[in-house]
Length: 81
Image (cartoon, rainbow, N blue to C red; front, side):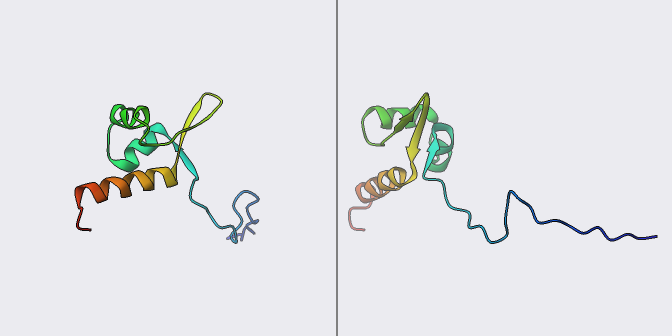
């Protein structure tokens, strides 16, 4: 005998919910996104080239700051672009 199980809608993930991109990421994820090592990322943070936000003990890097960093370095590498 086959029974049909009525599925209930999920409380945690409604189907009409829009998943937004994160506003900030932690250091390991930012390094992976940029394709550089964590130590190199810390060098850029120390030099002030990449902005950080401290919330408690967490160090967060705003995603828009990473985009500006890439754009700045793209123009240096390709001055004609």
